[in-house]
Length: 257
Length: 306
Image 1 (spheres, rainbow over the protein chains, first blue to last red):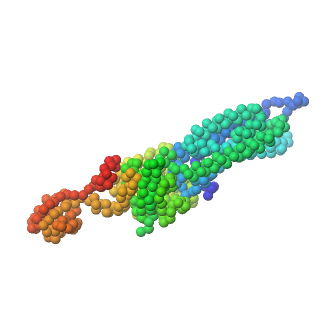
Image 2 (image 1 turned 135 degrees about the horizontal axis):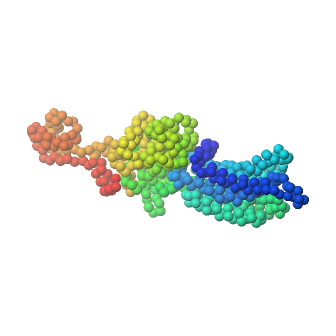
Image 3 (image 1 turned 60 degrees about the horizontal axis):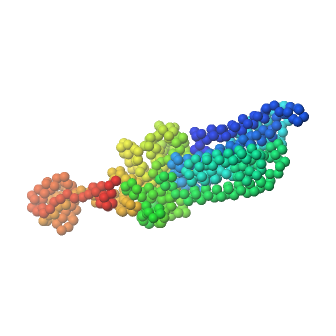
């Protein structure tokens, strides 16, 4: 049953700008990654080759800066359009528990996060593929990059229920977008400093696996902040998810809804 | 006949304001129930409670013989509804909107989409984006969606809103046909007396949140039928004359020398002359009976918006 709900959710996005948004979210990371092709030399004065780990780091950094805004916008649209287009009457009259409808929407957002993340690493993966013809592939860096992306997706999803909650209460995409924009700004400032203390800000937690790929950054122990940061993010996820479930279950749909 | 829908003491309050007050409604299988009331009378709120969109403050709803509370999914799978305004995903075409509905209802049969569109006459606009639909077309599409999963009960809130007179007539014929051929039970809310009068087999009149009367259309027609009230010297003889000389049996003897004649309402002088010629004295002759509109106004205390 859940599959058909997700299929219906994905179908609702047909002919919308959502897929353009996914591409727009993925493009900057690809562009930034190409800077890895700029000529570089090692401390020994020898020309350095392509550094896959560095490319993944740049891709991850760009993605995690944009993620709060992009993903808040995505879930905001998925949730609020039902109110805006007045399809909420029909949606809540289906013989389906409302919690399932909510979970289908959140799962759709998670799928979009994964797709955006996968598309953002296209140029890095293409580079790895092309360079494999001339030099051995750095499988360790490739594995670390894929792991980083997966972990960043999961951590990015942690703040999605909060954006969903704002959209359903505000019945508009604006509250979640404003939150996302502010969070993206704070994330940008936090990432510029490269400090681990920023992990305490839930939207900066996805930067944790990215930071692990930064040259030299991994030497500074981030665990001291990653653990409490993880706890804060988990708490935020749990509280906002429970709020969303209760709100959906109790919501009364009136004429103005 | 099986009772499809029953409400008991259904009440909705917002703060101190009672919007729906102790509504006891009964709809049997095959009924076309006209839910009549002026704007703001409580029709939509009642329909919203019936579909679980809002929670009653008090009272019970029984659908298909079981309480709605705790059996909502079962009940909703047997109901089709348009509440207030049929909302659609405007970026999608009609077929895609119905496909979403089909998936949400867990139906396997894709052909039902074409069938539903054909019923409401939207086959030609199947691949047209709903964004470009007129309000009337959206209403039709809403009805197609409500019909798609072959419901036993259709709840339609002002379904003819936005339709032109031709469209209203078509819809009326469609509802009557669906009730006759498919045995669908209807609950149609409206503020249009004429619409309800032509369609409903049972009428519920709601005003100020209270269901003032629930009456079979036939009984209402009898109540609101125009007639000649005649007081005569000999009612038996008068009845004989009405049958023999005027050839009508459409009358009732109301007692104490009174007769109520439902024919010749426009020709009282002919009736009077026939009775006089037969030797029956006419003491009093008057036209009586309310129109449905008068009846409604009397019942609601003169509400003027209907």
